Image (cartoon, rainbow, N blue to C red; front, side, top):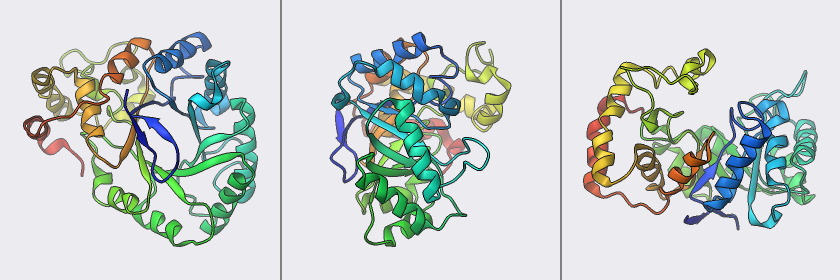
Length: 315
């Protein structure tokens, strides 16, 4: 496993990190969750990302249980705030950040959160109020660094223009071979201001593993077999997208990689990306994905990827 600095912070994170949306505290029981977290540690993963809203707190509790007894200084713990946790508990107001930060600390069984992220932008609360509240939790030692997820270039710029408070060190955008939208503006703006990228959905919700096929349909235990998940994944399950992904198979084989490893190595080729966040329901998935760290794709491979995907890529 190789490691990269997260933006302008002092945090060094593994190139492959473990996310927990729809898995720990949700689809998996405590033992299966712990097995995956321990497998992640075994392959050198040190960044664990969750959110208060995952399983309505269950995701944080499951992660805490899995990490119990592990040296706290040996891993980086990231969580998020914004989405509703109950009636009136929504957004990034000062009161909400204070309450939700304390609640996350309790569920995570820790004295501090390494990275506290604004899960989305709050268009109702004044940005200055949000930034002041984030500055306070950092000053209190509850949080080491702060970041954001899925903010627009304009929203990022507005935060950068506010002087005197805590500075963002991370951005968490959706980013994969199929979804390259952040390349247009977000990456350059963030790089110029010491903000690293934690790429979520680098495998396009599993589509870039090759497990979805127009011929066979989704496996019974996959996200694509669940009606709610299908709705979330609809853009990736179109026949033309699945056909394009199938064309990547020989490209991966030529490079001596699995399709997942090819997709993750492609994300990590971007110097702005500090880590690619993967999900896992089985330890073997982590063993496979971890091998993408340190792989450098040649120009011929990168060209072959673009030719295989053609016009299904979103820029």
